[in-house]
Amino acid sequence: MSDGYVDTCIFCKLAKGLVRAEIILQDDKVIAFKDIHAQAPVHALVIPREHITALWEVDETHEPLMGRLLTTCNEVAQALGVGESGYRVVINSGPDAGQSVDHLHFHVLGGRKLAWPPG
Image 1: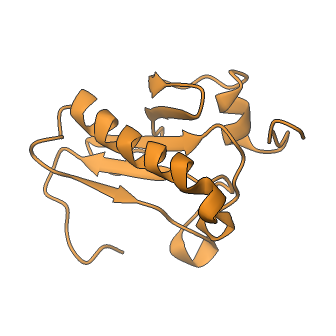
Image 2: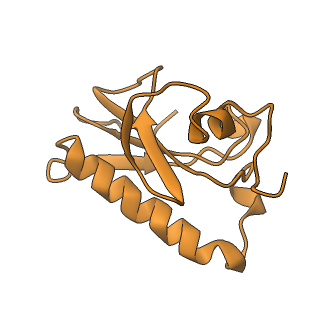
């Protein structure tokens, strides 16, 4: 597992190109793609290529990557046309928060008025 790949993780497989997705953008650190279970007209996921199970595994060594993930969320919102109208970035960490894939991912949601509080 030297490159952080976990063979049972669907997002690791996607990042390696083993699973198809509608890619919005990608680079050597992150990949962004449309969510197949969209909860809003615009719903994309932004993931690190490195396997990180959840936000609780992040420490100070991940700060550059976390910054890149957030700037990617902004780039995705711009690319999908909600950068000006507004969008929400959500990280679910753990089953009680609704995390369904054990690979850190950011949801970028928009395209309609989003209610508050969520959930």
